[in-house]
Image (tube, rainbow, N blue to C red; front, side):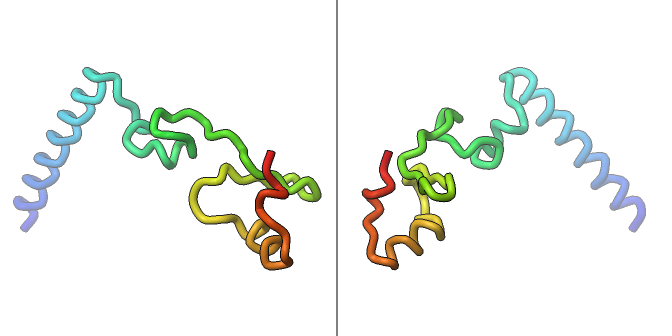
Length: 86
């Protein structure tokens, strides 16, 4: 059992070395592997412009994804999201 674990660890380490070498060769960073996590921007990693702002609280929304709670609450009160548009 220990021999199988040692072999698996050796194979894993070799794969990690290959991945690191390939990343270095192409200039890939860890942030490139999951750009949504590193930057909530567009596909090129650029920041997305704010399209809606709550003047009372300063909260913002880019207009992408689910509508934030603060805007859902305002719409439920009868306001239109366009009232918060910049």
